[in-house]
Length: 476
Ligand SMILES: [Cu+2]
Image (cartoon, rainbow, N blue to C red; front, side):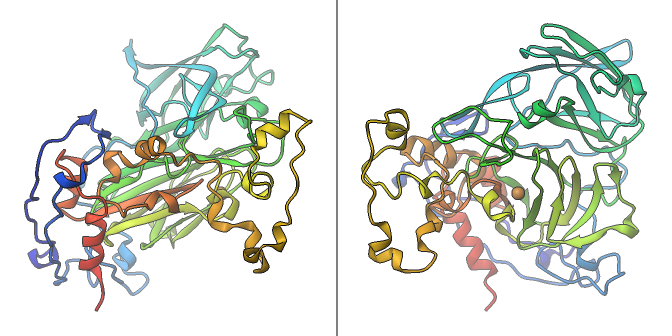
């Protein structure tokens, strides 16, 4: 890479001090205390990868060339090193202890309250207090022991999805083992000879519909070539939670709440990468019955793996949208050569929002609260002639497309919980109004912005980084 091809790095001008809690949560920014970021210039010089640049959208072709659309362009790390750790935003990792050569993990099946949106705690089922449960990360060749305890009110069992293991460890109740009764534990032991994006889940169907799953990543000892600099994991799930309820109903065949790693947009924490890095994203679909076409803007990615592991280079396919079916995983990789805040979303329109109660109740009966007349049959709100009002004379308008916030609480407190995260610093003001349901954001940040967002507590003016990236990438 030539020096011309890099962005000029300049120190950020900062003012005042700032509070940071565990690197993820920040206090609101007083407007008068912040300074706009300095202008950063970019020039696009020659590159080392045929016509592919890791710093701007580029071709690298023709098809068949290893650099075509960045296919085999390496990351910034050298080959021959162990892989980077996986980041599954908004989830935790399961710790282990070594016991006589075994990596021993502990999972407890239990009812959980998962905060889908700020203040919206939903009653679903999961492991160790969350759903999805904590991510297990292990390495090819490990001997793994997982002690599964059942704190549910009914029997359960644990399946290791995609693992080639001895049948007695496969976790199917009755067929191969006695169900784990409430209060009891069961020990699973197996060797890892595979690699890839695997997962664990209850093998009781209706418990699966209550969400019970988690990632089980098996790394190779040495990272696959070309090495990636970032490795993210996102788990997609749907639930049916009726209006005015916070309890998932697994008996229904409709699904109105949608979460990535247990949170709905815009509460899902953005993924932040440095401009020019090679990035892997692992998608896993653990929805009961719905598939997700996952679309990523501004880049072409290469499909490099499935729930069965790594795909050979020759069979990789370029995509910008990939359909992840139920209980499937798909890994893709790309070079983050296009700076900006890019939407990363399921393309099913009803998955891009949460439940649309506004269409049915309060929207056409202003002045009434849905809960009020659902629970008190004496209150019968007068229907209004909604179709007679002026805006409803436009065909299609009654659906009020911008109003499908899905019950998202956009009060100042809830909004603060969404926008005062480190990962959102410098995004366009009001960005959260455009990110719902199965939508999240992948930010590609040149220096000095990456460091300002991820490693500095200096204040950042809302919108300043986004605006500056727009300015420097404008093609005029
Ligand atoms: Cu979807």
